[in-house]
Every structure is written in C-alpha cells, then in structure tokens.
Image (cartoon, rainbow over all chains, first blue to last red; front, side):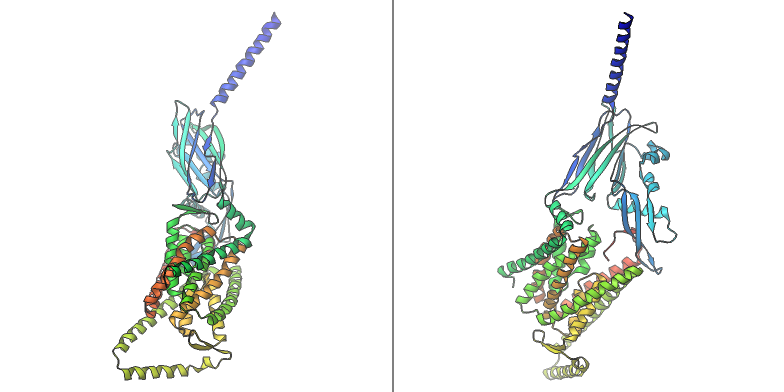
Length: 257
Length: 316
C-alpha cells in the first residue's frame, strides 16, 4: 500500500512537471517573418515584410534586423591644402553590419539602460562601441567619424531606427510590425531578433532569419559577371554595338536622314 | 516602373534612366562627345556606385557612338584615316595615363591631380571655345555687310597666314586627309592622340570633349567631319574600357547599360539630325556653355562643404 502511494505521488509530480513544461512552451515568444525569402527579380524595388509572433507577456518589444558584422571600406573627405573638399584617403570600419534596422514600441533608451543595450548588442550606441576604425588619418576623432558613418548608412537606407511602429495586443499576447524592406539591402541572409521588455529587463527573446536573393536573369547576370567576366564583357560590347547600329538602321528606314 | 540592377545592387526608375540616356545621346550626336563627363555624375546622383557608374557609362557610349558613327558615315562625315591615327595615339596615351595614376595613387596624390586636371581642362576648353565661337559669329555678321572685293582681300590674307604656319608642315610623314581637306604630318594626330589619351585616363573619361577642340583648333578639321571622326574613335576607346572594366573590376552593369543605350542611341540620331540644322559656331557655343556649366558645378563641389564626409571609392 505504502509502495502504491509512493508510486502515485511520483506519477502526480511527473504529470505536474510535464503540465508546467507544456504550458511554458505554449507561452514562449515566437517570431515569424513573412516572406522569409525575398526574391530579387528584374522589377524588384524593395518589398513589405511582416514580422509577428505570439507568447508575448510584456507590453514592449524591440525588433532588430542585421547582417553579420563585416568590414566597410569607404573614402573620407577633407580639405586639401585648406581650400578644396575632396576624398583624401581610405577609412575602414570593422565589426559593423552592412544593414541594421531597429523597430520598437517605444524609444530603446526609454526601454533599456545603456548597460543592458550594450550587453545584449541592441541599438546604435552599442553598435558604435563595438565598431573599430582603421585609417592613416592623423589624430582620428573616433566619435566624429562614427557619427559620419551612421549618417552615411542612414542616407543609404541601410541603417534605421523607428520607435512606436510595433503594435502589441495584450489580450492575445501577440505583436506585429510591417516594414519597408529597403531595396538597397544587398543579397544575403539577415538575422531578426525580437526582445520582450518589461521594467527595463529582457523577459524573453526569439529569433528568425530573412533572406533576399537574386533570381532569374538577375542571378544569371551576376553569376556571369563574376564567374565568366571575359564572356560578360564581350556580351556587353556586342549588345551595345548591335543596339547602336540597330537604332541607326531603324532611323535610316524611317527616313531620318 | 522600376528595374533592379544586378551589379549596382540598387533599383532605379526605368523612365528616369532611359531619359538620362536620351539627353546624353542627344549631346553626343550634336557635338561628337561621348558624354562621360556628364553621365557619370548624373548616374551617381541617382544612387549608382561611382565605380559602376563610370564603367557602365563606357559601355553605353559604345552604343551611342556606334549609332552616331553610322549616322555620320552615311552623311560622309567620318575621316577614317585621321580617326585611326588619333586612335593609335589615344590607346598609347591611355596606357601611359593609367600608369601615371597607379604611381600617383601609391604616393597619395591621385585624387587631387584628377580633380584639378578636370577643372582646369574643362575651364580652359570651355572658355576658349565660347569666345572663339562668339568671335566667329560676330565676324560672320561683319562679312555679310562687306563688299565682294573686301571679302576677297580678307580671304587672301587668311591664306597667307595659313602659309606662314610652316613649322608643322616641315614635320616628316606628311599625309593628306581628303575627307577633312587638310594636310598634316602623321606625327601630329598621333601626338595629339597621346596627349588626349593621357588626360582622358587621368580624368577617367573617354576624352571626347578634349578631342573635339583638338580636331577643330589644332588639326583645323571642318566641324561636320570633327563630330563623326570623334565618335568613331570614342567607340573604339570605350570598347577597350568596357572589356577591361568587366574583366578586371566586374563593374559593368549590363541592365543599366541597356536602359541607357535605349535612350542614348535614339538621342544620338536625333542629335545628328538636329546638328545638321544648326550652324557650326552655334554648336560650338552650345557645347562651350555646357562644359562651362559642368566646370562651375565642379568648382562649387570643391569649395562648399559636402553634406556627407564619407563616400564610396571610385568616380570623380
């Protein structure tokens, strides 16, 4: 009898643990990106991308999309001889993503402390701290050039920070945002990270991926330009000559001369 | 309607690019210039990376100049003999110029030299052409009011002046260029071709706007033959540049080139037809004004602080 009670107790405990586990699984934060693959075809001019998910137990969310950190080789401008503005040399920005987009319910500074942002690599301040600049420029002003770098990337629509754009529904524990995916974003794989925020802390997080890739004629031409450059060059010349002479013939036929 | 460019990695309005091609093609047909000095900055303004803009521009110039050459050849306006000699010089000068740039890039003085060469050459050529054409137009008005005897006396004076230019005629390898109606030593067009080739390579352009004044003022070729012959030699120069840029730098965007040439080939034909209706000096004064406009824009770009202190590599 004693043995039976012991067995039932263990069974009850196991059922309780399983129930707790399953309920926690049902409430886990999810992240879904639609479309997950963006085809870059001939008429491509960017697209709308929806990011949504369930299991949100907070009222605030930060979503960041980024490409893996890499190097950016840029030219810096300055005054030559104290008179003329021109490109003076190369500046290499290391450990920076080519694309970095941040969307949130509120300003990230309101939601998280600078320390937490840095720890979790969230926001532009954290990105600036991790960036490395290499240049032959004497007395390099790191803050000035990082500011210029951010400005440059924002003008190219590759860096963006937008708050108040993500909507949260506490009743259904869901969140949603629709973004304009920039056509300037180069083909590749991007990471989408979602952070559920409460009282200045990250309560939960989820991750997904998004990929934009060239398809059809875009893929064919890009492949040829890099893999068979001589053939590509000859085709470019032949197409131009035929087009030039062709239009010349048409104009003659039409009585242009 | 938008089109995604596989090498430039950006999306552009189809009509905007075709329109740009049409505009530059029109200038090409009118003046015999490739239009590189206008097209590359215009492409950069619509978001094309500088290296892709310069290389693709050369590709579309092949089409525009082929179309223009054909139109001028039909009109009997291409001096093939002169064109070939200039081409030999141009190729040699281009190779020399590329080497000069390589050496300067290593020492860090290339960008300064490129910018200054651009501004000085454009400024000098534009100013000279403007005043020369203005004087010619004034002289025509004066000639219209002269009597026949006065006209004959003026022409005799001109001929005597031409005879006195004996230094160039004493050079060896004298060749008569039937189409242009001039006799020069073969050394002269080859030498001038080298000079323009070096400058064109340093400035990263086809050199049409330099070659045209050289043909008019130094080789004394008639304006209608200058345009056709210039287009003929530009076509070959740009074929070479297109191949090298595709092979070495992978910077030719064939879709962008097709859109541009769709506009520029038609523009070149329209320009040629329009050119026949305009007087040579009117054409020269128009080109001079365009060249001076580009010069002023470049000077402002050099003096005023840019809104962005970082930029992609390449371009002007």
